[in-house]
Length: 117
Length: 109
Image 1 (cartoon, rainbow over the protein chains, first blue to last red):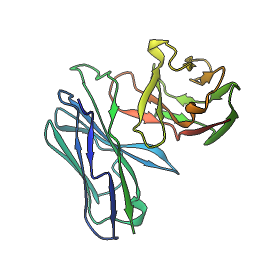
Image 2: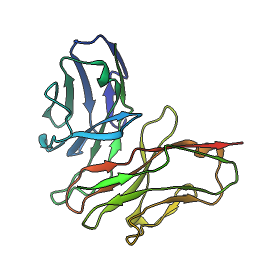
Image 3: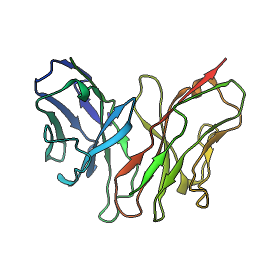
Image 4: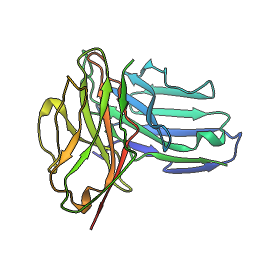
């Protein structure tokens, strides 16, 4: 298994543009997580899905951010419009998940490094 | 709400010296604690979890509920241990992880 796959690996865009980050979780995993990593705030959970359903989106910064998981093998994180303060590394992670408690290790993707000018 | 604190953003030691990366948490229930590591240009990966009570790459971490700490220790640091280390907490019921701010460890030759 190639692990969690994210694309693009690097993205440079101008303020105001729409940015779409993509994630393919490990096959068979039921839970998917989006994180943002910055020097100032470290790793922050933005949103997570279980069985394609958003469970907790309390970490999503504002309405400019949206995430979808149309099927078990694909998720997107969209920023529209993007701002310079959105510059960060965005990680996707997946875990097998269980019907109770979801107490499984999370496996991280390589991240997407986003720079908004 | 749960919170994880890593008081040191940067930690520098010499090869062969002991190293301790501090992690404190606040959570009213019984948490599950983890240490994740991110080596240069690699993805974040699990290093160890407190319920396993194992030693990985010479690192150990003991959950101290009285002090609400989960410090990561290694008696003799190696240059290849240089990385970013994150302490994380998971609630008793649920799957979200709360991460600390991270500690960048540099092991000098």
